[in-house]
Structures are given as C-alpha cells and as structure tokens.
Length: 94
Length: 460
Image (cartoon, each protein chain N blue to C red):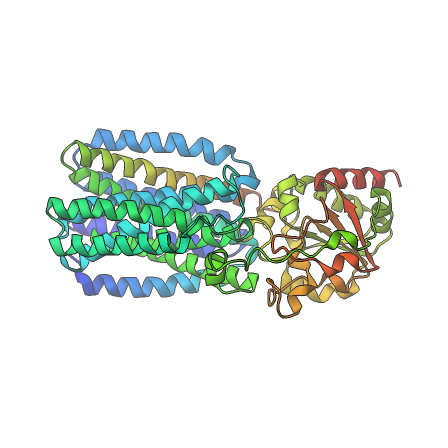
C-alpha cells in the first residue's frame, strides 16, 4: 500500500511531467503524439489482467476477459499504428 | 529483494519508458525510437503482471490477449493514412471501455470511501469515452452524417443522462458498493453514461471532430489514472496522468487554432447555429476560373510557390499527386513550400502525416507562424481543398470564424483555388478571397485537377 498521499504525490508530479514533456511538440507530430499517447493508456491492460485474475463467477470472468481483449486492441493497435505513421517521417533529411 | 520490490521496480522502468516515449515524440528524428521505447515499456509491464501476480484463469487471459492482438495488428497495418483518425478514435474508445469494466469489477472490493468514488468516476467517464469514440468513429468513417446532429430536446436529454448517472452514482456510493443494489445502480449509471457519450458527440460537426478525439483521449487517460488509484497501481496512475495531460494540451492547442473556446466547439450546435452560419448567395458573383493549362503555365514561371493543403486534399487522396507537382516545379528551380494550418485535416497534424506518406520532406512543411510572413514574397499560392483557414473574414468581427488565426494567402501575387464547387467551407460563410482579381479557380476533384496540371506541366 502506497497510501493515498503517496499516490496523490505521484499524480501531481505526473501532471507536471506530462505538461512539460508534451508542450513543446510541433504541430507536425500532433497526430503521432495523440496516437502514441493513446497506445500508452492501453496499459490499462495491466489493470484488466489483475482484475480478471481475481474474478469469480461466469459474469465477472466474461467481463474481465472482454476488458483484456479491448485493452489489448488499444495497446497493440496503438503502438503498431504509431510506428507506421512515424516510419514515414524518418530519414527525409537532405 | 522481495518480490514486491521487483514488481515495483519493473513498473518504474515501464513508467520511465512512457515518459521517454512522449519526449521522443517531440522531434521527428527521435519519434520512432520513442514509440518503440514506449512499446517496450508496455511489454515489460504486461510480462511483469503476468509473472508476478497470482492470477486465476491465466490460460483464458492469454487467449484474450491473443484475440485482441490478432484483431488489432491487421487493422493497424492495413488502414490507409486518410482513415487514421477514426482508427485512433476507435482504439481510444476501447481503452476507455476497458477502464470502465475494470473499475466496475473493482466496485465491490473498494470498501467505500474515496476509492469507491474513483471507481464510480472511472465507470462514468470510461463509458462516455467509449460510446463517444464509437460515434466519432462512425462520423469519420461516414457511416453516419458528419453534419451536426441535434435531436429534439437534446440539451435536456444530455443533461438528464449526466444528472441521472450522477444520482445513481450517489446511490451506489451510499450503498457502499458491496451489495446488489449498488451493483444495479452502477449498471444503470453506466448505461446513462453511454447515452451521454453518444449525445455529447452527435452535435459536433465534421470539422470539429478532431478536437473531440483529442478530448476523449484525455478522458480515457484520466480514467486509466483513476483506475490506477483504485487498483493501487502506480504505473496505471502515471501512464494515465501523462495521457490526460497531453490530451488536455492538444485539445487546448486545437481550440486555439480554431479561434473559439472549446465550449462553443462542443455545444455550439446545441445553442443553435454558430456552426451552421448563414450562406450568402455567392454563386451570383463573378469569379475567374482557370484551365489546368493556365495554372501549369503560371506555376512553371514562378519563383516561389506555397501549397496550402486542406481537408479536400485528404478526401480526394491527392497527396501523392501534389508531391509529383512539387517535384516537377522543383526541377524547374521553383521554390515550393507547404503552408499547414494547425487544423488542416481531420485531426491535429493529420495533413503532415498524409504529406509524409507521400514522401514530402518534412522540412518543406511550414507551420502557420513560420509561413505567414512569406506570403508577401510568394508568386503563386495553390489552395487545395481548403477554405475557412484562408478566409480573410476571420479578421473581421461578427462571423462564425472571427478570431481564428488564418494563413495570409491574400498577400500573395496570385492565388489559385482548387475547389469542387462554389459551396462555402464548413463554417458556411462566403470567402471574399474567391472574388479578388488575382484569384483564379480550378473546379473539379482535387486529384483530377492536379493530375491535369501535372500533365500540362510536363508538356510545357
């Protein structure tokens, strides 16, 4: 248990890191950035796995597995599609 | 070290990877590696949880992951670049859905208090994000109309569904989460939240959908952060917060680029008409239309050409033809630049991705602030499928686009519009620029017109 205060601290720091890291991105990369950030929240897969691993009864297990499928689509699809976009930005320097 | 310490360390590594991924995405050179680092972080996190946690139903979980991957990879690989925004919207929605389910299943184990509030919050916002993203997907895929849809009693229904969800959330909270009555309240709450998500996105018109994608992305980020709090999982908290912050920034940047507050984008159609605008009878006024040969000659003997691509270019899939044209001009020692308005395309930066797909060097892609001072020294501006973002009416008060920063195309020597018809842009207002003496119009599908200009240019 990290305790509410510990989590709150992490949350506030993460807000600042998020704003700081993203605020300098050029509009050229807004679409990949959005797509990449989208892939990152696919990490809810970890939560889905944890919850499904504790689930009891058919309804809970089914719901949990549905969450695992959805989260996997989010994470895997997100990273693959971002990579495809960024592939096109590479090595165009003269 | 104890097992828990190893797990926490692995999560810390994963969280660091996510921060590096976002940081990498700030420059085209480091972006691809950044994304791979992010993917590595995600892999580390998933392996950690699979190995360390004492999981029931492990074979089923692995099967579910396999199913999800099998569905996602081909979709992500095959989708054309023009359809990218709707795929991102869909991926965002399923993430929100997953977060809502996770929080719903955790309701009874929270034991009341703030964690229960956080899980109820996650169920509501996750559901809104899910259904809202699905509607966004349908709009962008043009399975439903891209025009704003307002059903009778829309504001009441929208407000009512949100309020109802809130009431049921309070009921579920009062029951303490662990009893059946609380579960039923939570189910009702989720259903109302799903309805609210649909009602939220329906009135938003096609051109404003990018802002909604960005906002829903932030929503999903916040729900993931909240479920991290519920599950006492620092990684989810950090990752979700990062996404929430980046989504918020992007949404604000977009709204600024559109020159109106986010609320008018979202709720303008509900208030009646700010996005509909008034159409003036523009068709009666004389315009100069040009043939592809005229355009080719004008371009061939210029020194500097700026191409302003818009939504119409994306629709016509004309990005490769534009590139061909630019190459031909470059071979004649004409300087070619692209002036990209921040809201060109269907999501922020979408135009850049489309042009990058056509191998346009990103050094030629100029942002608005960078390109605006250059129009005065430009011989020809080629406006392809854009309208509102070059409309000087934005500089005057009292129009739907007033205050929107625009590309100062009117300062150039010559302006050529490639348009399908005289129909006004999305904002529904006439563009004075079309009637100026130094403006010519080339009517037709952007790709057809460009192909004709290219062949005329080759024959010169």
